[in-house]
Length: 178
Length: 178
DNA sequence: TTGACAATACCGTCCGGACGGTACAGTACG
DNA sequence: CGTACTGTACCGTCCGGACGGTATTGTCAA
Image: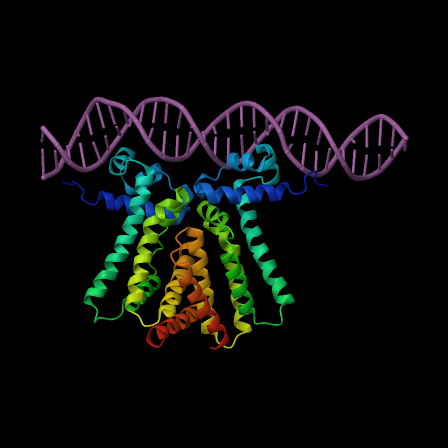
């Protein structure tokens, strides 16, 4: 079916890299094609418009995170949802994982492209609240993690390693004892 | 000295509005000039490059927030810094204040333009930690608020009014009793 | 006080280049 | 044969920025 079955992934990866390194305003189709090592025609074959590319970037991000989360929930020892989310989010933060700068490009192009993100977050929040005794703690946890991720996304990370450890410990404690 | 002393402010305001309504990728000099009711030449006179305009947008945002905070600290009944920050941030969120979308435009154009934001946040954090008994709570407060503001900025607000009240109450309580 | 000049604060136009997107002929794998 | 591209050529638009012009105001020597 696919000569290079992963062309699509190569494109998505290239786009994400470019958004990260060049600033999302400079994410052009030409640049993406060049970085992905394909022709512009090939790029447009896979994604007929720039909006389609950005949409896929957003979708890809949500799905990969959602899938990782689901795996943990399935494999986990029936820990509450919030705990799994907490662990996963921290891990992604910790292991120098690149920020999903594609989201920024999508947001810049058209704010509505982030609608799936909002929906994903809402569903996530609902599931976390279900499996918890203390809604307020879950909300604080969610928001604080969101803050941490945003700082990474913006490149305005401000906490020292010690501070981050401290705040994560505090958040972890909030999960245990409401 | 200035025929229209507030031309600069008009430009900044126009730019912020456009970034918000059109998506920051479509923030062009022509559009800003038109929205501000001046010519492109006049715009370039005030801000010789687009980067200069965005930089001013960032600076403006930081300064207006910083100033509001300073006023409260000066006028306040020697409440801790974190409490003042908390109140101010909540107020800005509550009163349907427009998100500072100019920040997104700046970030898209060149991530380094946000350096002043990082510096401001770092100083703010240090001052909040000074006047506090529990560093961890301050950090959680700061991050959760940051999360809330980012959601507004991204247009991915996900909390219901009730949930927001709940989380704000919880954060307020953390300030009081560590 | 006035005439000469300069500084300020803009206006309006133009340009080279880049961008998103189209079109289409060719090609190589399976 | 069809799928999955490559490669090239091109179009219309928009963008950042440069530039020359101009009206108003300020300064200051004669």
